[in-house]
Image 1 (cartoon, rainbow, N blue to C red):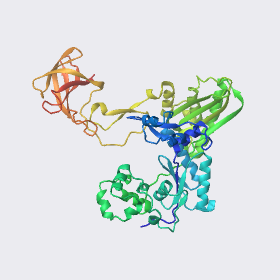
Image 2: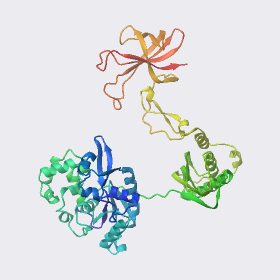
Image 3: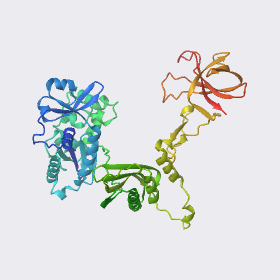
Image 4: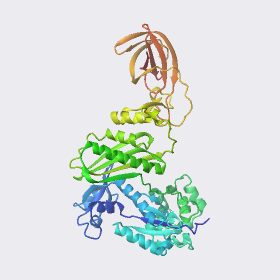
Length: 520
């Protein structure tokens, strides 16, 4: 099966994304004396700072990517180093992928420095594919980005041409992909470095060399490698369109946003509360139009002196009740200093969820003084803090200290993992088990007496053991099993103790004893 001739994919390779983005952040433009001194972007590694990218002056001095900073400075003592912002590069690439949808209906990321755009059926809007590439190259250059472009029937072929083909390369729909890409190096298959090393040692340096090798021979050599980047056969089939290559489109999502620009700056709290209430009403209408409710809201206040005050809320459940939103924000505005006045206010729903319309109660007066659980949780969270409002939830684990977790009050419970049948558990568990000294007749026998917190307790009754094995999928192989006992001393006090390990189990010395819970 060959590539779909009607599919057209545009690959954009930002060969110098990191350094170009640094130039843009510094207000510099390439080609205008922007690199008077050598500079490199570095990333911290276990062996010290390593070069990620260098400007033109650094490259001219012999500095190369992946070189240790100390080695690079041996070549270029005047080299300046700036920390590399990998997260910023990825965010910039995401925004660029959305911007690139001007040339096609959808786009996808090709980390760390590329974008894939499906331009199927769109080239005629630009006067042909050559004109589309020219338009893309001009716009990217205008933004200060060095880019190489290519169009082909598959994403793999477009990527290969953008990285290793001639500038602005196009593989026509009627061309044979295998012949068009035959002279490209095997690195065009997007393989791991160790796989490329193996191929070069085998004398396979160009794509046409792979076509001359029997497929079963390559399959035997790489049969243990299932990842596409580790198997040249998978990558070759993706490049030629014999097997599909999944791509995750970047979808632009505009969060609901409302704002009020004031004719006169406001300074008084009463006016600020009124402004927030108006914004909450505007946001409620915007959310209702989208059939959504807000879970996280961000309020920005622009002051005359240029300062921006930001307050955020995270709600327990999706809502678009303007009175509730305004009331919650009122508790977050007590420390706002308006200074010379606030001239612009903006409210954004950074996180929203579907919220269907509901029929209003005709006797709503009965609920006027009531408080829903979600509203109560929101008020407690605003007053006490997000970490102070939690609820326990069961967790699928036989280990007592792992059998529950704390989560948000209205967060749904996790997926059911089967019913866990426990023996009787004490009402009170210690934060962590405390070691105790136990006297017993035999190492594996029933306990007779134990010392805890400096006091000796004679055991009048004991029940057990209840054996709990370690969770081997979470713990090291040296973790010992536990034998739990419910014991009662002469005064009627009841304790939950356990023995960690067995004598001669090969996982340590003698067993150790701990007290983990108490009955009231």
